Image (cartoon, rainbow, N blue to C red; front, side):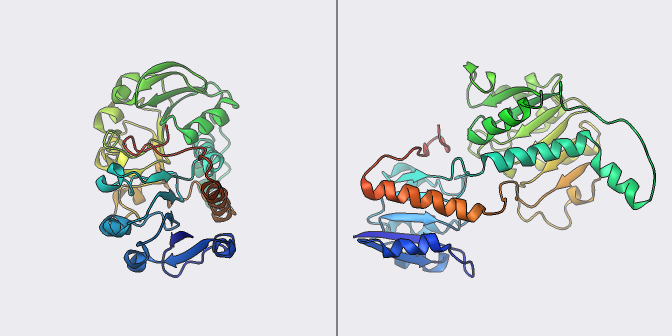
Length: 321
């Protein structure tokens, strides 16, 4: 008997393809919310974090006496990797591959919005102002993608198709990367921003990347350049970002993630005309929950068959290598 527990947020429906796993011979399914997780953990072999924002597991982890595998239905796993789990033998997987193209398209949308001055056109439309003007090309502009994982690579491929020049920043410097060419060490980010038009943050949140994008980085950016964050809000020093915008050190920011979510209603970013804010939705295209469920079912079948997973999270690094 394989005991599978699904941690779900209260009041949210679990897709049928997940609950249908209870019909498989030898599978015992438990669907619980954070409050009931502790009582469900004894005997649980597999844990699906369908509520991938929950941090309930850490306080209850000592009750997980049979846990072998945790799957997070998200790309980022920073809220999951507490010390006891990292030191354990429990395997962790994530939703690698599910959000790559949607997020890449979202980034492209941000860039087109800025290059083609869409906000200006909407303002002119509201005021019935016929303001014919030139806009900017994406082709020939330079983008530095901070984070060279699967999503960063898909962003690189999408932008390269539009003749955007691509470079990457990762956990260590290296050459000959198939998508980025030479990858710089993200610790040296500030010294590589000359001539860069777009700084795109898709870095995982780790100890090394917390507030990676700081005042030094913003000071090194070109005055005409834009900052885009579709990764994790805490990789950015938000106060430094606000200061850079107020001092006109950068041309604008397009932000899907924040260090505090939801972004407080009184936060100064809301009132800025040079900022576009979206509510952590860059990967959420129609059917995304079904795609996440399908991915887990495939992985669960591999687990039952004793087959290796296509990818696992390096718990010490904080991401899939």
